[in-house]
Image (cartoon, rainbow, N blue to C red; front, side, top):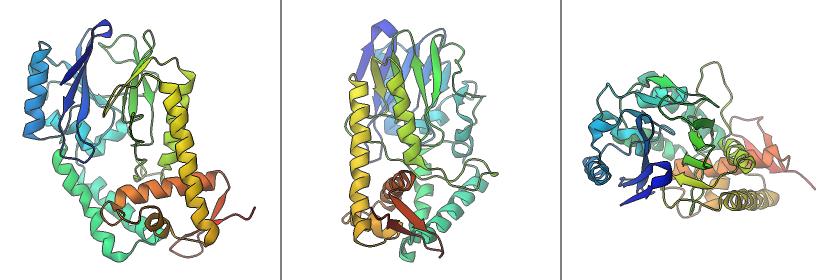
Length: 325
């Protein structure tokens, strides 16, 4: 199913994925270069759907002149492998180890989570969950970025669109903003019906030891949109978003309330991050541990930042303690 905005020459294609999130949206922009934004997962079903919808708007994959990726997750980059190496792929530098499936990085990723699991007090029987990354990467690609893009830059062939760096859901995340129309192609920065998960990731440079705080990053990334006259967001999943500032305010309020719920658990007794996760997600934590522990730690990071809780780091397994009012 396609949706076309003729005035801006942005074409929306809905591509099936094997993931619980459902279809992913990719976008074709008809500028000086025919540009594809995001590429869907690496499955035959996705590739056939992409070709069919592309044909409906008068193009073939061979017509795509460049590809921009909003972030590295497999449902957004997998089909890069189906395009010729002559088609340049453009994105944030942090995409690089993910898109190349850099084995040293994958080992570092596993080591990072092994350390985190100890710090968070995760039961040892859940250690195999760390290997789930390799399963999801089956739907990703092995591709190099041709060009790196950063905050404020424009991409050749996309006159009038500038890059916003928007980490949180992923450290590699960017959005494309067309100032003349107020249109944002936002990847998974802002979704209409669900809040993007602030996923835990290792530091993306070896000289940085402290882990990123993705919930705080996500809050900052969506809050900066409040200063922009955005008329419409083309999202990575689901419907377009027109009441953008209203949704942002709701998402920030929703997250604050979620954090207050976690703080109420800690007001009863100190907890490890894993214990807080079990309390927040009692029926699904054991099925979706990485997602649920990321969400929980995001709330804990927020509460620490707001000075509502403190972290006892005296032991290998950290405990979170509510501040006395």
